Image (cartoon, rainbow, N blue to C red):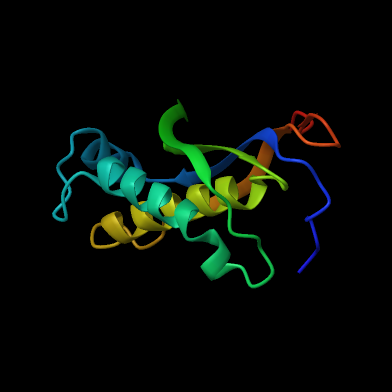
Amino acid sequence: MVDVGAKSAAERRAVAAAVLILSPATEALVREQALPKGDALVCAQVAGILAAKRTAELIPLCHSLPLSSVEVTFAWPAPGRLEVRAVAKTVAQTGVEMEALTAASIAALTIYDMVKGVEKGVVIESLRLLEKHGGKSGSWTAPAR
């Protein structure tokens, strides 16, 4: 584990996202909250937040951070494409990129779990860090794809 003891605490923020590709029928069920297991987006939102809080338990060399905020939101950028976006914030000696990535990935996996009974071929793609702010290295934004 990297020693961050000499670093001063700073406000830090990270944004991560994942995209799911769903059939039109599955998309309709998700949008209408009509899946057999219930509302996939509410369940995934809670799962993502809980996962961010447990990142240090899941990633072996990740520091445990006092999170000040975790948000998990959803958008439909195109038909059949559901974007999961996670924003994590802290005031700490190291960044929250892993917490944001963990939240986005677990939220996406939760959606898969919620829809697998109606569509097994859902694809999760493009898990990536979109931006990070704070700390010695400052801000970074992913290049457009």
